[in-house]
Amino acid sequence: MPAAIDISIASRASGIPSDDDIRLWTSAALPARSAAELSVRVVGKPEMQTLNREYRGKDYATNVLSFPADLPPEVQLPLLGDIVICAAVVSREAREQNKALDAHWAHMLIHGTLHLQGYDHQNDADAKKMESREKRILAKLGFDDPYQH
Image 1 (cartoon, one colour):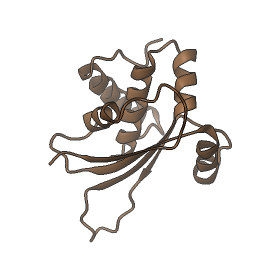
Image 2 (tube, one colour):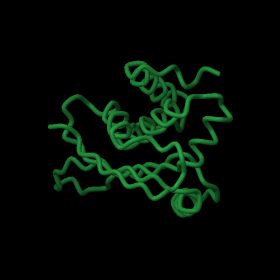
Image 3 (tube, rainbow, N blue to C red):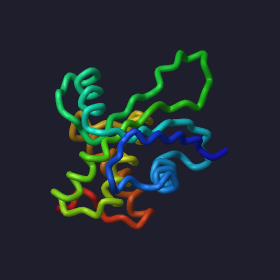
């Protein structure tokens, strides 16, 4: 059963990928034949700043936030959670880092999807594991290593 990915666009920024690309890139970060369900919400800077302040205590708009589903163990649903991505921040970062916009979108969506599956980068070992996974997924999609500058 393919992943079910709900997409909500709440931003008027240019350069937002198509729903098909969003689905392709998030699905690429899921296990094969995953029955996972998740949502992707594309937002503007004010909404992202509010979410980042409320949930992480950081008062600025960030590129991507992941909110893993917190289901009780007895509830057996394939719900992974929600990804919120800020179109303006992703676009700015792509320009500043001289990256193709679609490559940076793909990276941020894969990054957020991996967070929903428990990957993190709180210490060097975990960061290395997550970055390695991101690079493998991106390479399969035809994108360069996002950590090469």
